Amino acid sequence: MMNDRFYAERVKEERHDTTLLILFILIVGIGLGTLFSASYYYGGKRFDDPFHFFYRQIAFVGVGVVLAFISSRIPLQGLVHKTPLLLVLTLTLLAATFIPGLKHSIMGANRWLSIGGYTFQPSELAKLTLVIYLSAILSKKGERLDDVVNSIIPPLLVVFLFTALIYLQNDFSTALFVIIVSLLLFFVAGIKFRYFLFLFSMVLPLASMLVLTKEYRVRRVIAFLDPNSDPIGTGYQVIAARHALASGDFWGRGFGMGTEKFGGLPEAHSDFIFAVFAEEMGFVGVVFAVVLFLALAVRGYSLALQYEPSDRFSFMLTLGLTSCLVFQALVNMAVVVGMVPATGLPLPFFSHGGSSMVISLIMAGLLLNLSRNAPASARGEL
Image (cartoon, rainbow, N blue to C red; front, top):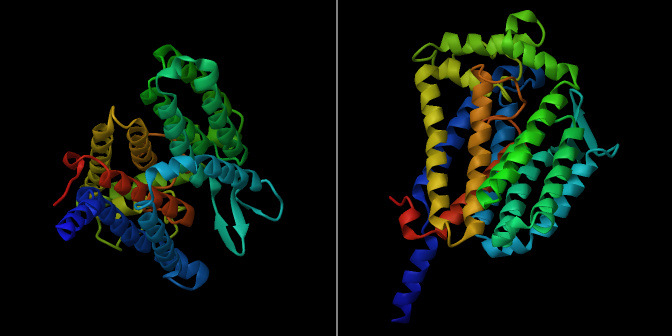
């Protein structure tokens, strides 16, 4: 009898959202294939190794999968208790990007730490940390969110500190993204609409003003409105991306057959990797990729609703993690198709980069963790 009960409890413990797992496997697999196609020419030209970026990405995925497995098993309440430590660690890493000898600059941005020949981008960790922190603190405040001084201002100051440090790294796009996700969590936490409206009305003009403080940001906006105003400068990347989209047509050129990656499209293996995917997979591939991320959104938000209102922390954490992955993907795709100005945000699970890949996989692991603890009706088991 005890063996039967142990077996039943073990089966229950192992259950997870199969739909979410399949979606993550598909997205990561397609991302790796696209990364190889987008990077083999540049890797061979710069490092005399066509597999240079692909092997690195495989290593990043390996590390990320291990951490995703761990994050899918850790007790969520234990995560709440570790939030202060996570905050201090992330803030320390963000501040370390200003220390000579540790900071690593690329194209004028001080977003990376260089330790032992390896680089890490703390702002990627900041996205995860803020989602966990805001979910924990705002769900704990509960009915006391009307107390502006004690319930809203303290977490707002933390968000401001994170945002300021990221912005000072010359990373306006990530700073703005962090603010948007934070505002979403404040909103779903249930703060008064007038408070939310006040915060939003403060962010909009401030963001517009900060855009005007740097010439390259203004140029990006102009290139978005009229790429031909600077066709060999700021507008070059936008024009190349649109050309890749157009040449992909309906069915695409076929895997590995794209031509823009042969020097015509800057950052083809990074921020503009979706242009390579679109050229080779065509309109059909673009729709399929968008559907995958939208399916992730539907699954994630459906899972979040299963926790509402009984478990506010899990509800907000699920919603925040899902939003981080999906919003960033949609913004990156929107940049490539010319719907918004260039941002510098990577495409999750596609763009080359260890920090983005590892943090994205940790988020995936946490979502699977949340799915294991959700009511049975929330699990997409097959």
